[in-house]
Length: 121
Image (tube, rainbow, N blue to C red; front, side, top):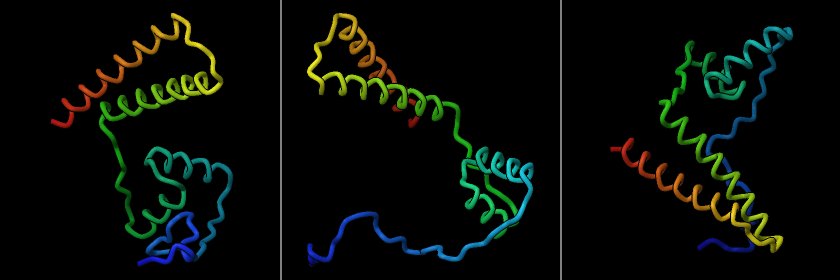
């Protein structure tokens, strides 16, 4: 059994630690192009350069538009829920407009859940 005194918490150790640094010299334009291509591929610059260097090509991560829509909706809903929590934590009362917005948010969440279930099937 693990000794709780030894567990200091924090981030778990990685199985394969990357500790070798490789510097690449480039001009500003080249850096912007590399950065842009890495962003389009959904990777960090390090991941992008490592993938290109090791494999000679790149498998671009693409998501269907439905997944991007779901993610956008969830981010929007998350921001709204955060605002609600902030209001409740300061002991402010909800106005009738706030209550109506909550009802709309609830419906949006239900519709999003239905869309996700349909997409998965």
